[in-house]
Image 1: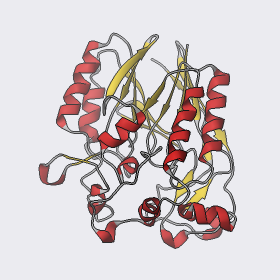
Image 2 (image 1 turned 180 degrees about the horizontal axis):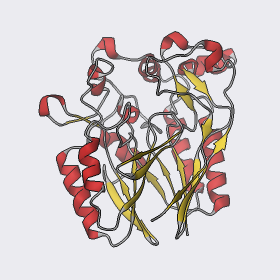
Image 3 (image 1 turned 45 degrees about the vertical axis):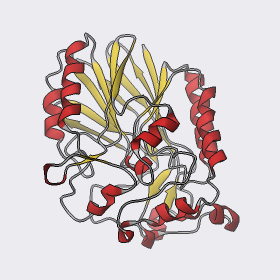
Image 4 (image 1 turned 30 degrees about the vertical axis):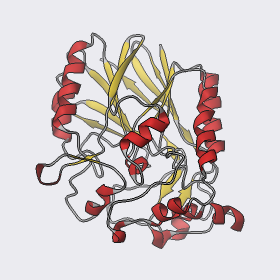
Length: 328
């Protein structure tokens, strides 16, 4: 049996109570005696002031507030990351797009002590793979996300990202061919055919579907949604954010006291979950059991604020669904 604790989308520079959410996650992971824990991106940015290289009209209010460094100073970021030293198990990282809004991949990886953009490791009878889909592919050119560069294409239709380049796909194919174990794949962005997911998902699943010992599950964050889907016969589980759902400025709302919102001005753009959401995954011989949880929104709720999206697939819920996935 293997136990894994999975969290995603903490967004330290938005949420005001990141320490509470991290401490809750670590406490539960230790109680469950997990074999390892993993965060799926949009986590903790480096402890120095960043910068952006996208056009001024593409700079979000969150990016501007982060640059002003209100409340989330260097010491705070370091302390939050050091909290994971209390975890009684290995801790792994996945790069997220918003980790790269003001920093390069190298700067983020150096802070996290992450050695590779994408990599794999074995635990007991399973092979685990971490992918990096934080690339754009405009006009056939492969561009790493860095300092918000990808935002120049955002929400303009047919975005050339997220994307997994050929060299990473070649590595993935070779990595899968070498293991004699079934695999589980982690990525920040979803790998299947759905809104906001990897645009060359068909290439990805062409590789995954041919894995000699099978890929049993793909797990992602990014969407701040609670979803269990399927692609090419492989389950794809989107882990809900540990913090909440970020909304456009027109849906901003005051949920906390004035002092808190002065220190964390971007929290007004998040529909915050009362309690942190994450999942504990248990893998045994016959099935993968995902244990989630349900909480509530801090008021005013998205409904009270009138949050709506043109894409009907975006459904906000303070839930991480539990599920049993039979293994064949």
